[in-house]
Image 1: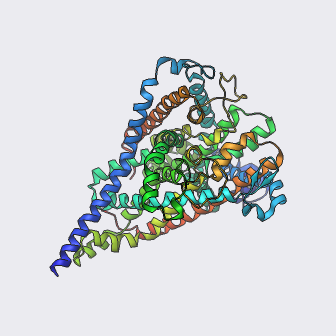
Image 2: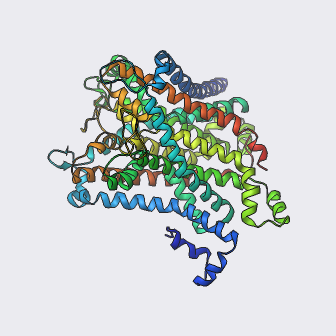
Image 3: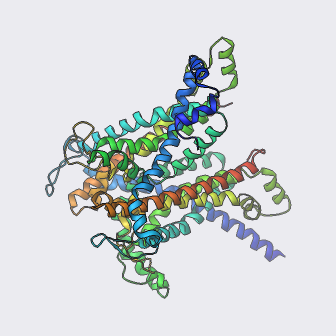
Length: 283
Length: 329
């Protein structure tokens, strides 16, 4: 009897510490990744990395100014395309919705969220690249924009639903009609949460490589306008990491550090500061 | 399905066109219509996506039929296309990933939901969420320069020494291949298993734990025999979610799997996955049949993840709905 109790107790301690080890392993992966990138990429970060074009193949030096600007242009397009649709769609689900349409939209949004990003690339390829017969910034922005919609839509909906009823009733009582109530009371009350969702969605697509490979493609020079192929940070990391040159590898590490830094910084800022107090507003 | 804005409007504006026009004069109705159009756009995009994939893969579908899925050759020059090596590679790497990620993720979720003090639990969950936000190409970068050499020089020879009698661990150690891709995938999907499992574990009512403890169970026994079985369906949901992620993951796999369309029993062998072949060959595909075969692969990937995700959501909804009502600890 005593032996059995001892066995049970030691099993208890053993298994519980094992779960702790699992948690430790999982969480330490992030610090390891970040540390390894800083270790490998930190020394190659310089001013010219941010201000220069890539050096001709085979020469050392050069920077990624065009990729950084390209990524920004792609993100701007993605935001212009995806955020309004997601935002207004979210307003519809939370404020107007009947029964069938909202159910369909909600379910589709959740499923679209899980569709592999490379499939979105094929879609944008079919919609923009095939009719135009060449790769373009526009096609890349469209692919990323479609990926932004489901996240923004679901986030907006849930934060709008959390706005207390009293606010709506107060606004009605003052004689506002519905759209005025939404535009001047409900949306501002939920604005911080909505902004959180938008920034997180953009941070997510900022690191996407797969949908850009055959839409925005790549470019070793500046990309004029919106109709030409453009370079972008994730694609450059991929090309350089799988390329044959030592110098490319070093630059890939540096670019990886920049990309990871930006993505993590956005995530931490948004999650730690912007979303603080949101749970308080939820009543 | 009411997908286009025009087809969907009658749902809310019943009646003839005159009354529709009259109703549109109110600002509320205009706002209603605009937001409805936005919401319907998402449905429209989804339908258009399926339509495009279906139509553009038409040539390959009519040419190869179902044989596409069981043919082993992939020869763009001869115009011979079979999807089997890619389907095999996708399934094998995902299976390896789940074998590693599920125990790790569920274990960590048990720790976070049952043991850790709330403050520690929420900060560790925060870190896990950040891990989920790390771009896939970064995992690929670490895979290429850190994991591949390590596998080649250390892990694969060691595995061969211990388990070399299994066909799974035979052949030369290249570093790249199914096993390496599976490991990278595992690290990438752990956060998804963790966060969903933690949520469904937390949704198990507290009385269940207390009842088990009151009967003399140890903390582990109450967790393993009562709480985990109660959350079982939701945990399966998290596994499906992770599987869907693993199947569609592109960049990290492309960088370490070896990109060689062949079927081999050994996990050390280089292979190929559906997403990887799309990433590598799509922009260089010459000829309509080649492109069409690639798009059919995209369609397969889309349908697979669509179904898996639907199933996962259903399972998660079932568990969390059943457990709700009583606040978790």
